[in-house]
Length: 308
Length: 255
Ligand SMILES: Nc1ncnc2c1ncn2[C@@H]1O[C@H](COP(=O)(O)OP(=O)(O)OP(=O)(O)O)[C@@H](O)[C@H]1O
Ligand SMILES: [Mg+2]
Image (cartoon, each protein chain N blue to C red):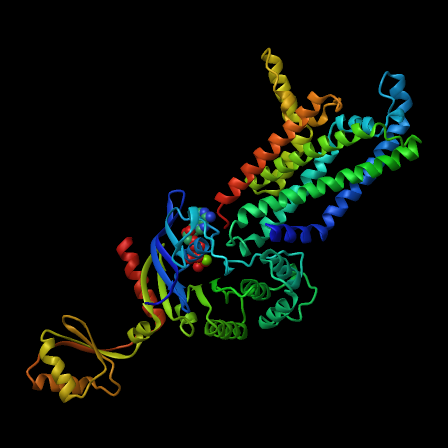
């Protein structure tokens, strides 16, 4: 049984008559990197704000370490947060902003840690320049440093690479992966599935405030892998043929009359010929490949129709 | 709470606006005494107060009773600015997930405003002393016991006003609106309206318990009853509006 660190149960947020997050259930286990994917306005930021204790849920429960949050307010101490714009004092320098936060956390001798963090995010040369003179990317980097201050156990990052240059994106991805290796649990949002595909271990797809799908990175890759989709009635008869005659071992029975064949080098012509030779009728057979983005769009469009 | 208080104190001592306000107050206070000196002869001739011969306590009471209450204006600007600069920057989002951070951040601001009111009083005492020395050649303090009671009473009333302003700012979350409301309160427009309303209804007299009325009223602090009433009004306002501010902060969504 994996170690749950955050558990959301029926988490709902309404602003006036508009429900922007609807009954979300999601468990985050220790050491995971959960990618929260959704279009603009899907409710990603709102969900993260509830987890961070910034916004009070209208209903539902939020548990940390399996402990219910008291009267709707989270009290998860060791949480680093960067949601939407970084909260920074414009008339203070990068160092002073982190210094203030270090005082709030009660970190002793924080100066060395602050210098180290500024270096990690590439702001070691910002010196006494005030944050108001920073570029968007620099503010974002400082926001990431602020979230990392005090070595949190959980990191909530809302579109953290927003405004970063390509090199910055690569750096932050590498940083996230490294932090995760050291045991940090990360909840990260994006509206681009591709962007997270290299780091997330689990995806949660959210659409119009609803959780459409929670899927592990492995399953997702499997779904988007190149495969041959085979539709037929007599599945029980077909399987032994696939295994024995065609030596296919990497396949999956998707439902009562669909088989996915992932086997490398498997040929449509070969499969159909062999099956027909054994008297098995095929309804359809075709090659299927989907990009992550196509998959995401398909999922959200489907949901969109359903809830239209 | 100590950590958040330390953080706000760090911000407080590096706050240029705060020093500017104190300097401005000092300059205007001395200038005001200079102007009183210019017109003191005419005022006395017209049956007014002989400001030049007042001791320190009497002088403070006299200046506080003259509208508008300048110190309340400085307190307004400081409190609204100090709270809103954090709120607008969104800096609080970084630490609000900590346990009880919402309560402590308000309490920290309450203590910091006490510090500011203290500094304001210190500035007032120094500038009164300089001004009266220069223009009235009078630096008498008067009765020490009375002086201390006056300072305690007025400090608490001003601090209560700072907390009232903090509460208003927490509720309205708007710099301009906060300052405007503060100015309306400092001019004691609500107090006057309350008084007018009372004169229509015979027998009712609650306006004397209104904070700003208590603050500007010239009282005998040696009278136990009047002193007690001052303390009571200050205490009620402090507790009431601190509680409202904290309660609102706890329930607030930080977007
Ligand atoms: N304070 C608020 N008051 C009213 N409505 C709000 C508020 N905050 C968010 N919303 C609404 O909630 C919905 C979800 O917003 P949210 O910011 O969570 O989306 P998001 O998934 O983060 O989008 P994006 O990718 O653009 O950042 C939006 O329709 C938005 O208009
Ligand atoms: Mg968002």
